[in-house]
Image (cartoon, rainbow, N blue to C red; front, side, top):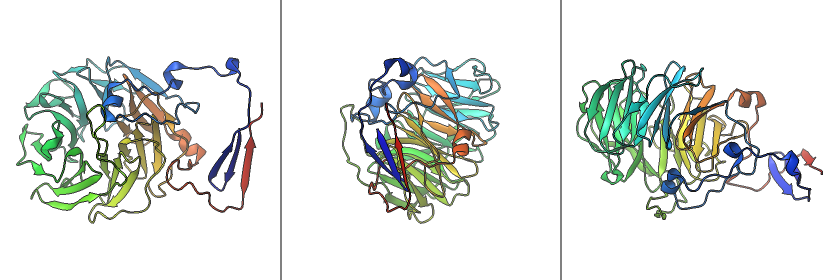
Length: 397
């Protein structure tokens, strides 16, 4: 293989080389092709996975946490960074000790699949949303149920920054609403917030005055929690999406994840169009260029506490870290063995956790900082720029 880089352009010319089985060992848990048979993959889209992860030598995770017996669907860090929690279709939430890699106490048992979890800002409570049965709020220290709210199944949820409110997206996403709950009292926090389309995900603004919702069709919308009025949008932020239903019966044109920058000025969205985009949260105007690199649906994003970096995961089986200012990928991708539904930064921004089928992986981003490189995007404009430097590397037998 002859590989040439012209100031960031990536050109490849095939040169036959012999295959040496003895020097190309395989580790099934890390280098096996992405699973198309998993429930998550089937429920996300009917399109085949196109992944560079199967073609590159994987970067192994720093730690792998094993304990769930079915798919992990959501992960979240505690504010102290010493623990995190994971939710699964095995109807449990497990709290993990990061240092030891062991479970911290017994799993929290539920009556249904747990689609998503959120941890209160003070780290004292966990909110878990079940596919059937509603919302449960747990006391972390006693592991007892504080509130069990029967409001229908929960698809996605988020805590407000003051910990007093929880926003949920109904499992029946065609309801086109975001529901608010008083986390202290365990009761509804007013009338549901009406959205202009099917809702997939939700996030509170840092001051708690607004919620951003990711919708079908590539739209997003910002709603005032007090008045219930739409203050931004709906805006079709992601284009090139086809409003279709795959063989699994699920749509493939969602805005899958939304997060605010810590100062509230920016709103970041990830979508089935394989991109991550940045918006002015007050006007809905796109700010700068999109983040390009994922080769399939981007399903989840997380932002560091200082607002400088974004972590993303998706159906191409990669975990990527981005510089929010430059929109460039930082270093190489972390390559998981399966599609990714949830990612979360540690409070100090050094580690990223992600689901990986039945397990949770912890990835150390410090090596990315040391490398200080940004991978060329694999989507978007492929025309090589005019450069003055040519770097050629020939890989010979």
